[in-house]
Length: 151
Image (tube, rainbow, N blue to C red; front, side, top):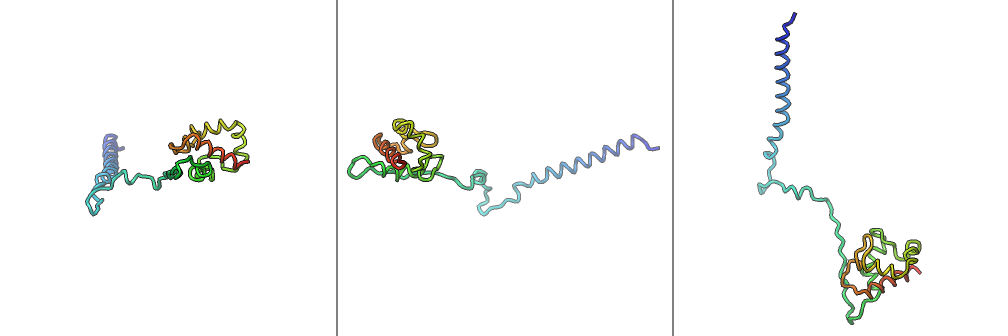
């Protein structure tokens, strides 16, 4: 018969060896992390730069200059330079200019509701289409122009 104490000692020795090997396999690569990385300037990569998104989208609207005469800009000009960026393409859920089905429920609410939405912003559209220097009259003329495209 075999000695139970001898089997227990052998089992403990075997477990100790296996645990030691596993720990070495886990710890040794961690100790080598900074040693293999060399750059010309000797500095490590900047972590923030490595985790930046691949592309960034920024929407910028070109400023709309006031008419040379100092008179308010007309609705067509404002639409073509500001509003059309979204309302010609349907970007950000904007109803497309000329789409009768999309504009019918909006027009049914009345022009005052349309003016209010354009002046104060609605959903993704910022107030005054993102151009703060537009006068109330200019915004209203742009709304009138868009409504005219539907009729």
